[in-house]
Image 1 (cartoon, rainbow, N blue to C red):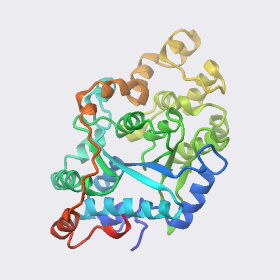
Image 2 (image 1 turned 90 degrees about the vertical axis):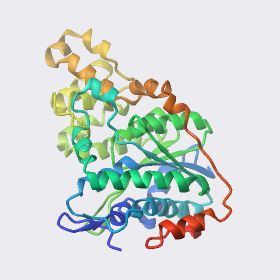
Image 3 (image 1 turned 90 degrees about the horizontal axis):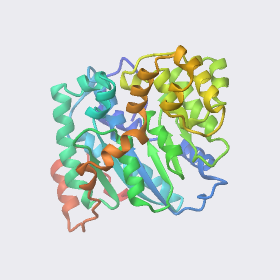
Image 4 (image 1 turned 120 degrees about the vertical axis):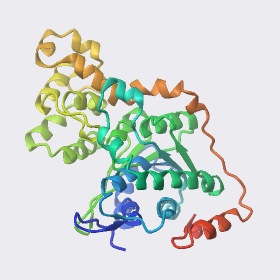
Length: 365
């Protein structure tokens, strides 16, 4: 299969999903660099969180040229994506537990702070054919995942950010095992410094080459550089800006984005990147100390440079830690079931009934 997706190609849903499957040679190198010489290098279990929003966003964004040959391609592709990563980690002697996390990431709480929050995706997600395909596949994932060994599907009814749900699950599991987040969205990168032993895999392929990146767990000396290199690559910062941003802590990534911009959620530029870095430097320098809006309000010089009220609203929408209590107190978060039901032939029946044209690779699960 051709893994690279070119701008003028007609593409299938299966191609889009498998573009998130990092090639094993590249994955071997990334995993070694991420986990070697750390306190979890000998871990034999791994929690893997797959951000389905980032997968669906690709499908919707390419809606004009996406070929839907079978509505079940999405479900089978996602399960086979789990097979791809499980097979790799099994070869390293690591048992994996997968959590497929879905939301449209258009929660009313975020939009209370920023009116147009994720507006573009909201509009694309309402395209009838793709909305129908998505909802049909969510039902299939609900049906099949309880019978798949340690593969769980969780969706948000109120469209909380997938990152909020992942954070809640990490806290709920409380198992001291390493966590891996697989996503093409940079919003979840915050989880790397919120939760110890949490790494982030950003799959990307271009011109036939696997250019995927991985952010190490926060205890590694390379964490800060890996974090900002990924952000800088997405934002196309100048060399001077990249050099400056390396001196500030990733814990203030939401604030940096609130002052500057976060186009992935339709949050436009408020101040330039230099202004954002200078403000963070003025308050905490290079220390790993999170800045809160009250600190900005108390500084007349900062108040003269930027509209702090606007920064605060944008920060509230972008900061996982701020939105988290809303989800934690929502009955939705209490209704999550992580089931491993006995398979008495149900998987073969479901596979034959729904996935005859694009079967799930049960042998590698």
